[in-house]
Length: 468
Ligand code: FAD
Image (cartoon, rainbow, N blue to C red; front, side, top):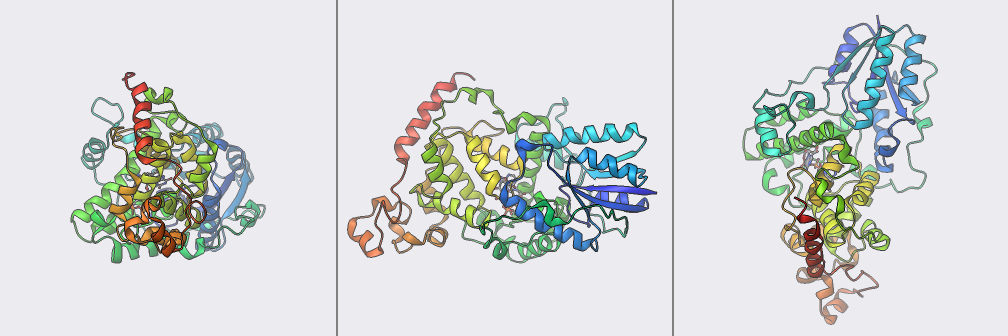
């Protein structure tokens, strides 16, 4: 019996339920298809493509070079392979991006019509979104009951599975990884190699280092961008190089304290984003709360560019945007502040921010990115009340109090004393001179007045508030 396992966002061999099933059934063709025909609106950004290249390289290595790689239309390629090799079954793990859900349906129909067995598993979430709903059968829109009642209250997550032994089928017509052309032509990725090791081995090293150095103190420390408390597992999770189940049990096998509980609830937010995307697939394009459809956004190309380039003149925002550009990652606290600055202080549509993040984050994830942007904008599920508008200066002072994070990304103002580091435009001339900073030339003057823009945001919100 011959089976195809279709790798997608599950680029690992351990704890991979669909892969286990394929390996157990006889000879298995490990297949990865870079789909160039479907889901074009939601294609991977350049940073994610960099990651994908290295992740596939690593997976291929784990399989002893047996990964069959293709580019094109997934349905067509699978169909051809099935005929060519007399395949009797195809396995995959479910994905929840709307275009993939549609594609899976089409592939299933095509295969079942030909009598090919299709076996789909849940390999990327702790709780499959099809299985979580309120008592009345409707989906959750509030995190705490979703996680406490819908997930934890229903059943514990599945325990991780061991790596299976496989007998691999190889298609000589599959292409070389480099033919997918995923790596950038310009050298913007040079620093990425210092920060990341894509692939299953890299994911486990990251988990081990988080367990040893980050988990203790996570609950408090996760808010401070210069501390080493967060796991940075997000890109590994996005590409499925490690499963949330492996992380869940590795963490819980240690201790059961507040840090562990808090970390697990962050994994819960990932579940929640996927739950939302599965039940409300339109959220990638439209507001979850339709009241925001008439929000008076203020598209301003120049301000958007200043934000993208980390030149807004607000140090904590700029530090975050530069971290993103240089490393493909931004700390969660700073993501919230930078996003809030874009949508509330600049009144630029969250879709613009979402698009930029999708292109530049190595962990760009349609579910987490969309849900988080809508959450910050106030149009999403369980969003904070609109009037709670972050003050980026106060946020900087509070969460980067010694300025270590800002100084590491904005060297041109690093000699300013802490008192003015968070709002350099307030520094007197002599202090600027001593620190060697010419405002407006070495470092930009702020593109928004935080107080005035806050009032403008509240006024803009007042125009839509009556809607419900
Ligand atoms: P840790 O604190 O170590 O958390 C562990 C894991 O829990 C993360 O890897 C992630 O999978 C999950 N998680 C943590 N926080 C959240 C959250 N708020 N929402 C959903 N899942 C979470 N996350 C992405 O994975 N991809 C994105 O494209 C993305 N875009 C975002 C955009 C904005 C505007 C904001 C505010 C947040 C976004 N997040 C996104 C959520 C969060 O910032 C990242 O998941 C987190 O910073 C990843 O770092 P970590 O792995 O060190 O997190």
